[in-house]
Length: 373
Image 1 (cartoon, rainbow, N blue to C red):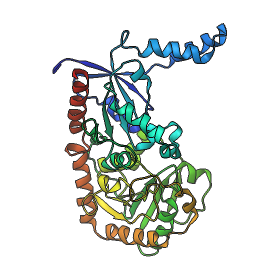
Image 2 (spheres, one colour; image 1 turned 180 degrees about the vertical axis):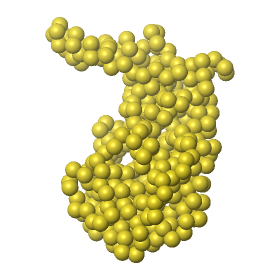
Image 3 (cartoon, rainbow, N blue to C red; image 1 turned 120 degrees about the vertical axis):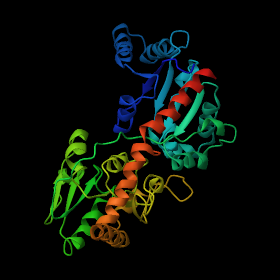
Image 4 (cartoon, one colour; image 1 turned 135 degrees about the vertical axis):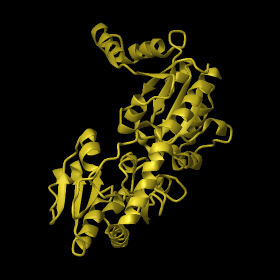
């Protein structure tokens, strides 16, 4: 099958992570997006004819997925579906964490042996060809609750990738601009960033730009040299804000994969974040950025879900604020260090583990092996 063009049907939400995949596919791979029109027609047919919706949907899916009509390989993006197994369709599925495999990300269901066995049996199915966690941490959340002893050959981490951004001259400014991008302001550590900045601005010529719909909608009280913007298009961020900032700071407590970190790397920005969950994989402390100890996380140290993490968001985290001040001060004072860390991150995107070339070679091989097996 080497050299032959392959069509892969992609199913999932078109987040930036997946847009980068669809617009930069592996060599010889053509993606076909799932078309919901036929499912809508099935629903309307059910409504007009009086045929129960469940029966109509079942008939639709049997025709839509059945390998007799369509043998295209399926790529399920960050969600789990048993329909391909019932319809004997080969598929691969990627995952941010084990929550992918349960309805509505209800982690309590993972305590039920019957649910875990159902997931395990699904992965064991001959039609499930590969599970591709986005990070090693994501794989560990699966290993923490599921018995994967018989399917380890099906599990392979495939890191997301970001296209390289052209290197241009940054707009000359006398001050240092710190950039924060996260719509979930509090969950992404925005409160601690603002508190840290109040200390930094008393000592340095710095400004803070916050791009956050939550912060903007709540009309957070601003301080001098802080700009709060609503959610902006990705094109505007990549064109106007990443290239014209000096430090990217997002001390997240809940990301499973924050694609903004790869965008910041592509722009050559040093990163300040937490050691939450997967972050040490994305930002290697002292190499492409600086990490602080996360004061809370939605994941426990054993990689099981922490159901109490949201209740802790109301707590104050002075240690985190102090660490942010320390790490940001280091980067503000040391221009050469900023450049070195930013360059390492940029190289990771251009030709390292987060590059399109490496991801495409790995994913192209996985697709071909799935069809040949």
